[in-house]
Picture 1: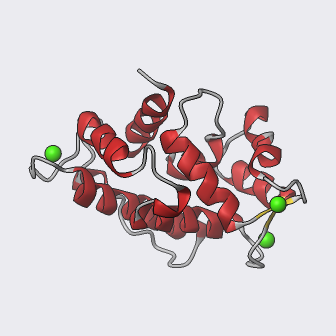
Picture 2: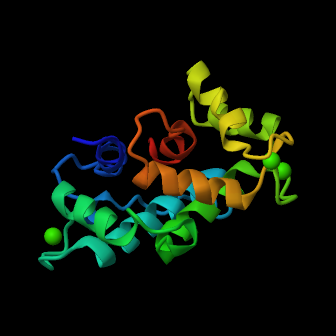
Length: 174
Ligand SMILES: [Ca+2]
Ligand SMILES: [Ca+2]
Ligand SMILES: [Ca+2]
């Protein structure tokens, strides 16, 4: 199995909270009590991905998505295509993760915002913190929405193993 398949399956397993081997509406998280809170934002990100992938990947129309369906969808819609061609729901998820990290809402993510985000998601792996420098393509100490679009594109399409992924998986882990 190639590197992007492995990453997509890690994401799949995080989303499949009912552990039945499908991404389906059982995996949708209940609305949280506090609208606008970080937990609510995060639940929306997960819902956006599930709804998008349910539409884009369910080739046999049985209202649930298998890993095979997800990978064929990734290969059909993302692999070999440019960053600007990322499907709408994927871009929406990326924008959601960006907003979750951008605590002060200034349209950029500083290193401390990135670290706070990881901490809030209970991610303590030093490799996760080190992703900031790798995501910051121009090295100016802050991340733009475009940086995350590129990272998302690499997550789903790059043939190499060593691609930043904690920043994304953190938003999907319960
Ligand atoms: Ca299906
Ligand atoms: Ca910010
Ligand atoms: Ca930058």
